[in-house]
Image (cartoon, rainbow, N blue to C red; front, side):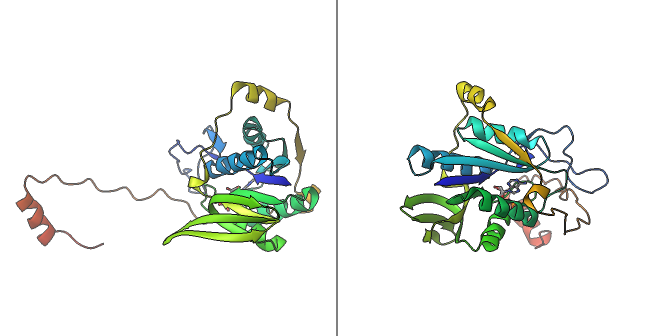
Length: 249
Ligand code: AMP
């Protein structure tokens, strides 16, 4: 079975994001970009399934600007077999990405698509669900364990009340949660090997998809700055302040 793993290039999670001065979005010029952390987990899970003999090939796909090829290369250095870059300068929304992935699923016929549960830049948490709907495939989101049994999978999900285990038939869509695994670091020999692995570059038009945005971002703003706290000298003073000054916001 082939596995398709979509990875998104996002602002590195260690970077404090800044809003552009005109409020139109988040500043990305000159900012360190990396693979979305949940996608690293998805790549790791795909590699483990390949190493366990369950998967035969791990294909990485990223949609976005030309530099997204670097993100694909990172996944290839973790051990994935080949990459596909769907190159476009259009700011992609989850529905557009899901349509591109649907077209690639028709071409590659994977047994499973493992996505991240959400991209940390715009927190949409929608692409996997939309892809499942477009394909009419079963989906298990927020996976914290995946077990493949023949043509079925068991997926454990972390929910409010504890753990839920779902049984799905393949082909299926799975989205990776934080505790699914701990992604490996790419070793130097694997980074070298990854340089020779193929990355095919295509466009949305090649897949017959119009990626034009359908949403309008009206404004993006920094979160409000918290007011400085007050230091009290005694428990008595704290109780007084709670009685007289504290308000429920
Ligand atoms: P989102 O729905 O935007 O929160 O993203 C959920 C998941 O969809 C991500 O973790 C990726 O696996 C995948 N994804 C989203 N955008 C892209 C993209 N431009 N290229 C490849 N994969 C993407």
